Amino acid sequence: MAPSKEEKIKGSLLGLAWGDILGCPVEGWRGHEIQTIYGDPFA
Image 1 (cartoon, rainbow, N blue to C red):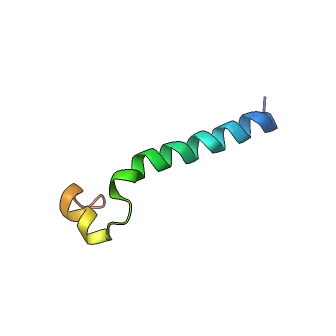
Image 2: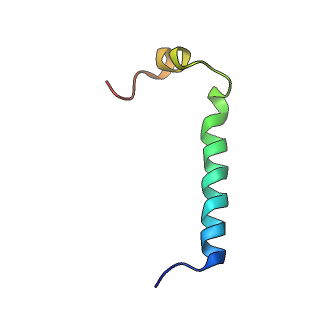
């Protein structure tokens, strides 16, 4: 069964919240700064 409109909205908001939580520590950093600390994810 396909998710309801309410479930889709809830999923979108939860995804946005998790993105903010996980991205907060590096907010405003430049790409090379993130790679220096955390490494290259594609290496």
